[in-house]
Every structure is written in C-alpha cells, then in structure tokens.
Length: 321
Image (tube, rainbow, N blue to C red; front, side):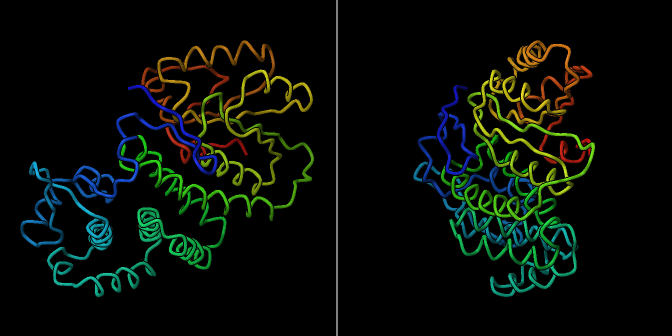
C-alpha cells in the first residue's frame, strides 16, 4: 500500500497509510482495535459482552459494530484487572467508579507497568494533556525517571509502534502523544551530564532519508547518555552523505537507526549494502531495528557489521554498553 508522509508534530513524524488518512479524526474502534489495545482476544471480548455486559457495541446504519472511547477505557481497566487475577464475574459487578478505584488500588501492588501504560493510552485517545503528564509524573514518583523511561515509556512506545502499523491509532493520536513524550525526553537529556569517561565509545543516532519516526531514537539516546556514553544525534531524514561527513570529523564507533516506514522491506538489504560500501573498511557496527527489518530478519540474513532487531525495546536490551 502506498504510504503518504506527514510531518508529525514532534519528530515522531509519521507515515500514514492512505486508507487511514480519510479517518484522521475518527474516535471509534473495531473489535480488532480493542483486541490490539487491550491484549484481550476478540472472541473473549464478545463473550464478555454477551455474558457479562462489560461493553455494548453500537452499530452503523449498515449494521457494522463499533465502539467508542468510553468502551475502550472500560475494557483497558477490565483487562488490567483480569490480567491481575480478578475474575471477570467479579469485575462485571463493578460500576465505572468502583472499577477505576480497584485499578488504582491494584496498580500499587504490581510491577508489570500495565496500569501505567494503559493510563498513557487513555490520555492519548482522549487528547488529555493533563492526564498524560499526571500518569508520567506518578510513574516517576513510583519507579524513578530511568525506570519510567525504560519500562513505562519504552513499553508504551513499543505498543504505539505496533498500533500504528496495524492502523489502530491515527495521525492525530500519535501527533498529540509524541509531542508530550518528546518534551519529557528532551528535558531528561538536558539534565544528564556529558560523559567524561576515558576510552568510551561514541554512538551516532540517525534516521534515514524519508524516515521521520524520531521518538524511539530519542528514547535510545536517553538510555545511552544515562549509561555515560557519548552520543551524536542527527535526527530524522538524514542522507547517507551526512553520515560520512560526521564520521570524518568524529570517527564514531557505532551507528543506531530505526526503519519504521523507510527504507521499505524490499529495499532494506540493498540499503544496508549501500551503508557498508559507504564506510568501506571502517570498524563501525550498526544497530538497527524497526518493522521494515522483520522480513529480512526472518529470512536468516546475517552480516557481522549489522545487528538487526524487531523493536526498539529489543535493540535497547542489546546496546553494546
């Protein structure tokens, strides 16, 4: 499917599948959307509707089922409690206020970050700036800044990437939430001291030309700087010749990038070969992740210069630091 690129707010900038563009302002969800957002199978959601009346779908004039924001919010709360071991029969007896209260109580006794990530999701879908900041700040108070970025924001970014690829979120949702995350990461980066460690490696972080999804790259920059590494951030839409110019001046050791929408999966191998040719006999190693790499990874591709990962979180777990 042909993709159209839009300059997303914050550098998360996006590529939008053309079929989504007409529905940019839509705030309704299919049962498949609810499945992806909640982690609850569509079949189970239907059973909960029929037996426990957890949510009730509306129907279009052509009898197609759809759900609204309030249904999504309730299902996220229900899915959290069920995953925490509360029986659905018990959950079904709670009104909305009781449901929210039990989620808050239970979230204080779990460390799987589901409640925090769900709170960020709901803030995104309701375009609620205050709710997003409240969820973020409460997570920092509870877990600390590093764990919040690593586990809560990292988990949210990972899920957001999947939701974007499956058309569950639209341009306005991602535009809204990525701007908020970008503000938080920039503020955190500014607070971190520059590393003075001897013999440290340097990392160049960039996104290739036409690639605009910057949020994951900022997250990785935060992790590296937190670990005392030297980072050189080029940001989005960076032509290969710019990398060569920077290398001539800095002789960086590693390169990190993310291929979310570009280069396309059928062009990735040729792009990697071009990178290898560009840097010739240098000892640079590349750490790259993203949806466009999955087919190549599944094909068994191997090259010692390139370390390929499916997601930002998988790459983060293998940073050479």
